[in-house]
Length: 440
Ligand SMILES: Cc1ncc(COP(=O)(O)O)c(C=O)c1O
Image (cartoon, rainbow, N blue to C red):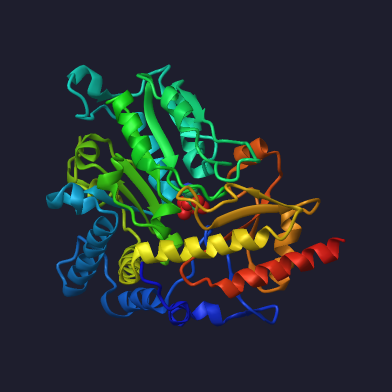
C-alpha cells in the first residue's frame, strides 16, 4: 500500500476549514454521510453552468452533452465496482441509478415481489426458477440497517413469507469476533425455501466486515434459485469492491457516503436477472413504445430509471469515483485500518467504555467504532463532543432491532474516512475525558 499525504487530501475539502463552536471541525460522522471534495462540487456546478438539459430526449447539443455525461457516469460506476469484469459488453446495462441504497433495495423488494426469473444458476432447470410463494424464506442478519430490513419485513408480511435473521456473535468477551456473523449458523439457514438473502458487506454499527464472497458461495451452493443481494452502502466507500468476485446478484449503494452529492445511488444487477424483472416505476424514459392499450419497456438500465433523473448528481458521482480511484481504494482502506487500530488502542485507556463490535483489529473490522461510556447516554456524549467541534453520531443508527439485542438504547459512533488523521483520534480521547469530568 502507498501511504498518501492526508494533509494534501484535506486541502480538497473546503468544509474541513469550518469552525464549529469556535473549534476546528473534526468530522467523524462519515458512516452517515461523507464530506465532498471541491472537484465533485465543481463537477455539479459545471453541469448546471454549461450543459444543463434533460437527457435522452432533446436533439440539441446541450441535451446530447448531458446524456453523454450521465451515461459516462454509469460507465464509471460499472468500472468502480467491477461490473465490467462480469460482462464487458453490457456494463452500463447492469448499473441503475437510484436516489440511494434505500431506494435500490426497495426497487428490488418491489420488483422481485412480482417477477418470475430463471436464475440460470443450476443444472436442473426446475431448481433455478425464482418466484416468491407463500412459505418461502428471506434471510438477512441481525445487524442490518433498517434500509435492508424494513423492505423485506414488509414484503414478507404482504406475501406471507418468513423473514429469518442470521445470528451475530454477542460474546462481548471475544475481542475479535464480537458482532461478527455466525457463518456456520448462516449456512444452516440457507435452504431450498430461501429465495432472497440480503446482507451488508460492512456493518454501520458494529464496524464488522462480512465475507460477502463466502456468503455468496453458500447461498448459491445451497439454493441455485436464491438471489444474493449485498448492501454495499458502507463497503463501497471504503474498500475495493468487485461484484464479479463477490458473486452477488445485486449490489446497492449510495453516492453521498462516497464523496458524491445526496440524491444519487446505484443498484447493480446481473443483466440476465434485470432483463427478466418487472419495472419498479412506470412513466417517461422507461418505455420504448406506448399505445393506449399497452407499453413496451425500454432497454436496460433505462427500464428501471423512470422520469427525469438526478442528472447533475449522476455526473458528480462520476467525478467522486474519479477522485477515489486516483487515490486508490486499497490505500484508503489501509489508511482507515491504521486509524482504527490506533483509535482502538487509545480507547483501551478507559475501563468504563464498552465497544460494540470487535475490539481487536482484523480483516473482519473496519473504521466504524460504536461505544458507550458507563452511565452516560450516547446523546450526551455526542452533544459534548459537538462542543469540542467533533461531529459524531449518538443514537440507534437506523438499527433498532440490533440495539435491543445489544440491550442499549443507542451508542455513540465515530466513523473514519480518507481525510481523517491520528491527531483527530487524540482529540476524541480528550473529548471523552471531558465528558467523564462533566458527569463525574
Ligand atoms: C449499511 C447501510 N445500509 C443502508 C443505508 C441507507 O443508506 P441511504 O440512507 O443512503 O439510503 C445505510 C446508511 O447509513 C447503511 O449504513
